[in-house]
Length: 604
Ligand code: ADP
Image 1 (spheres, rainbow, N blue to C red):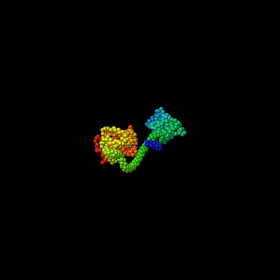
Image 2: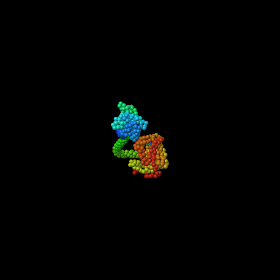
Image 3: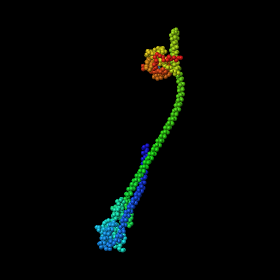
Image 4: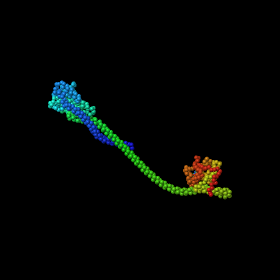
């Protein structure tokens, strides 16, 4: 995100710089306008200055212009011209000229005779007095002698001061009897120019600078002089030099304004250094440039903000789109899940139905199986007493043959007892098949064991099996049923004898019992081959047998295990470390000497 935005931002700044470059030429018209404005300002300002100066100059000149004419009528001066030799009149004239000179502010006034000799002068008492000097070479003299007003600019021959001379003829009737000259100091008008950057330049009809605020420019020629002009200069010497050097002014550096003074043939120039315009123009351009820059920056900032704004909007739109996509995906997932769940529920329901059907079938099969098991159990359990009955009956027959009726009666009694027991077994199996439950009773262990051994005694003796009994003398009372306990013991002892048939002598059978805090443990051990590995794992399963069909049904241990669990006890199968099988019966202890319930009699 960051990288893309920085990448995207760079060209924007570049385009901004490009735009600034394109806008930069706008500064040129700005400069042009500013230049024009400031030049106009300067021009109008200088025009006023120039007008003022020219008016001032002309005012000064006009003030003195009429003086020669007026003074020429004064009797004191005319008297001098009438009688130049008279000292008193000369002195009067000198004093008069001096007075008037002081009053009018003229530099000097003097009176000449028609041949150009100065008779009286306002500076008669100064060391540079004009009295006695001849100025006939000056043009103003000849002008005045011709009856016109003589005008002349020139340096004072003695004072070397710049002055403007007015000369007028003194008439006696039509005759010119003398010339009166008034010299005006022009140096002073130059000093009137203040110390401004603008410079004053006053040129005469020759184009030579006669008045200027810049002393270096004084008496320099602003244009080349032609031959006539050069000759005139040589003749009348208006400047301190006969060869005015050229004034090479850089036209580009100065802004010049000019005004002609026709009556004197002068040109007044005011020169303003261009820097006066350049400086404010530069400032204006700088301000314009800065404004442009600020505008650019503002524009850039606005663009950047806009870009950020657009970026944010795009980002938010993208996030929204992603969210929508996720919602759509999630919805699709959920829909998929939902349909899968529906499918599963459907499958479950089908499975349930199948299960119910299978259970029904199983129940049916279980019923059939139970029927089979029961019939098998009946035949298995009844085999032993039947065999005993047969042997008792055979014995009774033999005894009757030998007329031993009492003994025969005993045998018949035993037969009767056995039939009773068989009925009881059948009743038990029936009750078991119906899942009837009988509350356990307290049964003496040793007599039940003796009974079971008695049924098998003939077979045991025939097989020469040594019986090793290790039972306590005191009767052990256990919670059981008389018949069921005898059934279990009979089955286990018969299995031991079966196992011992597979083995040669000596054949041994150990019977031991012990009282424990939990109840009574009875151990039945033989020295037969012991359980095979498979038999140890599967011996409790109905119909599991390792014996041939004739011998075993595989129901003995299954029946014993079920009976033991029904009695709240346990049957453990194991092999003894010294070989042979070791069967353990855990029985719950019963109350001693009392039958909790009447003895089982289920034959009825
Ligand atoms: P059956 O006696 O009809 O075979 P049982 O359930 O009584 O059925 O016994 C199952 C199997 O357990 C026998 O086939 C035999 O292999 C094994 N078995 C039972 N008792 C012993 C024993 N005392 N010694 C060795 N094997 C035994």
